[in-house]
Image (tube, rainbow, N blue to C red; front, side):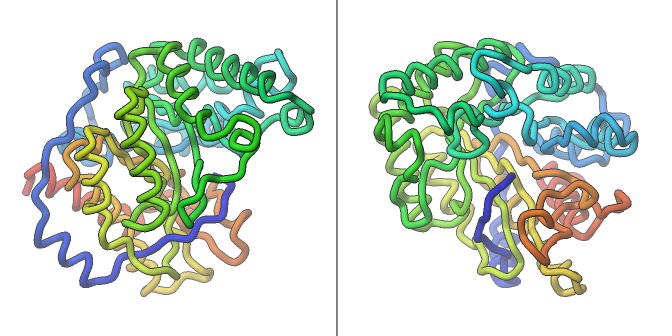
Length: 366
């Protein structure tokens, strides 16, 4: 994802605390999941997706469509290792409607077809965001009423196009600043804070069976931003706005402090009756990476996954890309990289092994 995030890696003491309290509650399978293709039998019983299935949590990946088309190894790993997929870019507004009124659904349709072929669910990403908007929208001089109708039409058109094919939608993405104030986006400026409730209502009208998430970064811990989001979704729930889940992105960096209270934080949302998910997990490292940083990265993935496994209604854990070969990180964070669970040659890293161990434990296997 194209954004700067400041997050964390867990310390040894925090990891030990989670290990000592690790009692897994089975994550509820979404009631509407039956209308999607069910997973195939897992020939490779020890993939992350297969282990997750036994632990009642979907393990997914964001997918780079160019890599999927051109790299056979990437395609095989994306198909065989994971039980859900998220488009990195091809469902974002600039991709699906580059010119006003002219839609390009083909790349996103390809991903949906790929998922169906491989028994995977699809997370839709994302309907309302301040970034990666088409130029005609960014540069247009629209009134508030015009912009509201444009947003309504966009959400309705996209959700309707994929109706019955999307498990979870990231409806609103990154609506808050780190201090807990609302992001001063085009949507807030022109439409006010009510755009969030409107977006969820419109998405639900277009596909009543899809699970609708609000998604953000730097909300792994209990902090000003996660508390502001908590207060918002609590209020929206009181108003019967169809917000079903909270997505915690999980873009972390070994240079920052640990989200050691992630399970406590996620339980707040769980107690509201919301689903939760880790939606974009990666852990970047200053390059070149040394052994200590590699182990710290493994601990970070471990703590994120354990936070999900310890939360009753955490349904899924998605890594934002699975191989360093196609990572977004080096292009955005100068001097940083190696953020994924497989290296550039598709070799499993310590982070992959940590996730595998956690899922094996959660499933009650030896």
